[in-house]
Length: 200
Ligand code: IMP
Image (cartoon, rainbow, N blue to C red; front, side, top):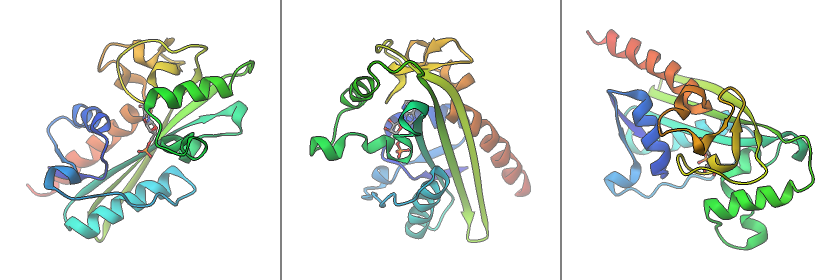
């Protein structure tokens, strides 16, 4: 199925395309469309819906969105829905991924309980009357120092409990077995297969 993917993040597209196998993901920028809806929701689900609805109103064709974030127990669940913008306000400009996770490590200096959870909400809009939401998560902890080169975003500082390793240390693709996005996308793939079957 051809799906418009409500994101500007190439890393997310790579992971999602790998996870969804035979489906084609088209980013707004692929078709020369500027796409930056305000993520005003207070939950991943709300933000995933905001992104999907915004893109659907522009393309009027099947749309998929992903909203994710990292919730750190010792920081009262922060950065949560603000994960993508963490530290921007204080810095006064957009931080790089490395600056962002280094800031997180600084903010966690001396903290013993480093447990954290990564969450992804996926929203699929097939048409006005068929909309689906899936939310999944991946438990882990914030490492003491960055390690590894695969993945993206906070992967160098996120230790995955189930894997017993830092996300960025896992070989490309193996992260999918444990990740929040991997779990959610496998359910999404089943749903898409069922929807495609309906056209037969
Ligand atoms: P958003 O979903 O585009 O609002 O942004 C999510 C934020 O979480 C971005 O800063 C991403 O870099 C980060 N993020 C999302 N998924 C992952 C992941 O699988 N690994 C590491 N960082 C991620």
